Image (cartoon, rainbow, N blue to C red; front, side):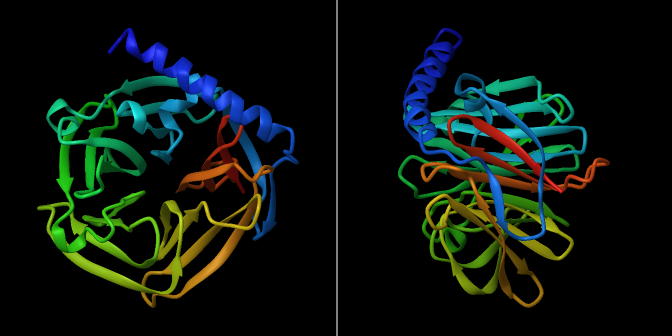
Length: 280
């Protein structure tokens, strides 16, 4: 794959440069239009670099871990990124093991860090058996895979996953009315938490205490919405709306971690570039 990757990156960068050019003609910058957050830090990357982490983000407090995919080339990747400088310090390309790649697993979504491991949502080519793949956060080496049990498959899209107290949480992409759960211990299906709304274009999320925040690519024009769910009651509330500057921008993953500089909500967005944006 060594000689193929630069060609893939160049192809992707060229395609996205065209999108960026036309999108940039109409961009008005990024701003928060609803919610008590403000942009405080931003790292932006060209697509030949950002392709490796344009789908999702998590952190252990020292590094961001980004998850990337380019479905047309069955490319999945993980990048380890210095939080302070934004430098990519390690990267695993085509990191789905061969036996799973041959079964069609070809698209990473958002993921999570927990106890030294990375858990990444992964979809298969024909959307039949979504999975959560596990990697060593230090080395980015593959460790394990959970195939979602049939009763928890839904529409077979799995755009994000989280781990908390031995439970993997996830949802489907559209028509989201519940948050589903499987066991870290044995991969069994644990049921679902019903929510009092129906969400669409769900891309990523993270916990803040008992609240689950979900980033979506749904909104009006240039605006993308983030919701907060009380996991005890199922109450769902629209909390943030971010104007990403152009209508073709995509809101992707989200992680929540409060750093010493006060930033807490960290998003991956795609417009003319791949952006990691951190909000106080």
